[in-house]
Amino acid sequence: MKTNVNRLLAAALWKIYTRSEEVLPWDTGADFPWADPVFGRRTLAEHLDEDNGAASRSSRERALQIDWLWHKLDLQPGQHVLDITCGPGLYAVELARRGCTVTGIDINPAAIEYAVNLAEQAGVAGRCTFIQQDVREMAAYTAQFDAALFLYEQLAVYATDEARLLLDKVAGALRPGGRLALELLDQDNVDKTDSSWWFTDDTGLWGDSPFLHLGERIWDDELQASLERYHILHLETGQLKQYTLFDQTYSVAALRALLLESGFGAVDHYLNWAGLPLYDAGEWVVYVARK
Ligand SMILES: C[S@@+](CC[C@H](N)C(=O)[O-])C[C@H]1O[C@@H](n2cnc3c(N)ncnc32)[C@H](O)[C@@H]1O
Image (cartoon, rainbow, N blue to C red; front, side):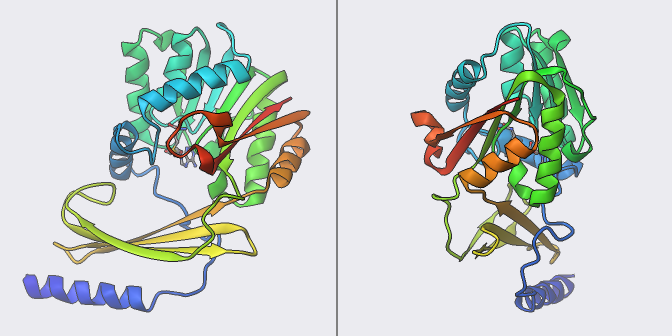
């Protein structure tokens, strides 16, 4: 048994050693397996971990953001908000508590289940609809939302053509005068170096038994995008899993042009979350676009 595992581990290391040097943007699988139920449960734990801002920000930071968004998006009780890639509904349910009607879309089944329960516990289930869906397959809503949120970078994992299609749909979903808050990495501040790292752990996003995580990050200057590859070696079984994540960055001018092409009429942008004390505020640009 042990010999077999050792053989698999050796084969996995060779597979890593002989990996392609070529970076293929948005190749099949160039994203996390978000819809996988097991991965989804582990991701949910990351969302809810107050010490780890990787998937959702902490409750203290969210409270600051929600106040800011409420003001910047001119939200009012009774308005209808679309939360795109809503995760476990941490923003959506708070907006419903303030009187909005909210539709949240996320691909992770565990996150959607959590959001539904959270809305029930908060007594706002009647004002919340959560849909487990790939956002690229979102229904073609017509002018029925007053505002939309697209927070924490998820638009950036798509190629620009796909991102444009998605923004067209979001614009179509908003009524005239409707507002979108879109959060993306600040191209001027993004790390433009290549790097690699490793760590071991017993449990976490990658599994529930000992694993070795080998990560590498490549910055593509021409595309202005980063590619991260994670090679996860499961030490008890010898199984190797590999994940890839792309992150397209945009200049403010390029993103503004995309939003205008999609039918938005005015676009403001806020660097550094306009000074909100978030631990990573300096990495972000928030666009507030009005249809
Ligand atoms: C960084 S998290 C942000 C979640 C939430 N907006 C927040 O700030 O708490 C990214 C989210 O995008 C979701 N996601 C990833 N790909 C998706 C897709 N194709 N369609 C819908 N949701 C997706 C993930 O499940 C995850 O909840």
